[in-house]
Length: 337
Image (cartoon, rainbow, N blue to C red):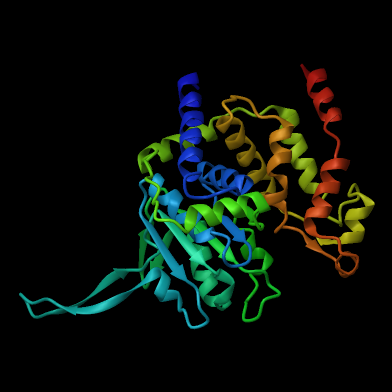
């Protein structure tokens, strides 16, 4: 791979961060994870209470990237056809014949914001999640490809709020990252109040086109990964499974279910994207560690004992990062050379 491609992606990343910063104050980790997922061809689930600019962030990213953008407000009465589209019987004014014509739903876009995805029943959730995985929609006997790039950002309110349908773990696995959107700091909140209550409207400059994004996604895929980094990602995922003999004692105590192979795939892809965005053409175990929490937090299931002791999935992942050895793998890789 040419160094020019690496510099191009790193430069695009800097421009994106600069433009997003004109509208979004703070939330640096959220923005980083969102962009890593975008260049890895992954989807994101943004979790946080209302009013934290999740919708504004998504629409801003779409505008800067010159991509089409649609927003679906998920409600208890939303039907699958409201998302995917449906066949409509129409008259041909010239022949007088009637024929079914497919009317595209809002999912036919580059960036789709699924707002409050846990406000709609599982049947409608499944319609969206199937399209995310297959990147096409089947209506009747016909299959329709979705635009490329296709990127879903779903927002979710905390499940302790009333009127929600929590996504099953198998469906959560479709999302590359589970991103926690936290409250701003006191200083950031003061800046928000000053910036958003005046008459100034920031002028956003386009940073990338859809074709450029597709090319940069290919660049990320070509980043080489050393053997010891693959081994570390594998060991980290396997250590999260309580039925593994080699799993740490705290995993067997606090987890009833661990992450599957898709977690390892996303650890590697996220690490590749992070390396390239920082202008590096090699992946380190530190890159894997950086993306581990958003990749794993929705792929592990805590036990009742963990819940009763206030142990969260993030706490377990942090202990995993501290307990799964890195240096041993690196030395093993050096010995092979």
